[in-house]
Length: 202
Image (cartoon, one colour):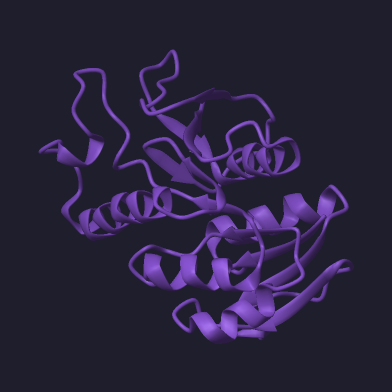
């Protein structure tokens, strides 16, 4: 496919970019600073701002799908969604957050007194983004990672869920960015969760 990847130079974005390239997709890597994306076969780098919908829509036009890996506190939901809608691309995948997933007691992860205060603004914006997305006409997918979402190993072994945090046998809720990228690109290729949020974890 021809895929536009917003925030391709970030922690999650760079791993999604690598996964897309490894599977032979043609990628337009959209970043603020093009020098942060190394020259790679199959990748076209474009300078773009997630908060400039009109200019971004022109970059996105003509792609089969758009993936956004931008931080929610850096890119307003209305701006990104408007850009995708204006571009004419219907398929939109979003790197979500874990804050709005529910814990075993039924409460949202972000409502726990143990939830890190410095992460709360991002979680709030991510939750709002999902709600705005639900009101769009796009064929969207919002993939939430597990509680611990860090660079790690690409194992290809993980589980999928819906709105509840997934926990491994050792009691942790985690997923590497590399395995998250596999799950996201799988979704891009197979479309099993269109107009849905789902999650991935060990």
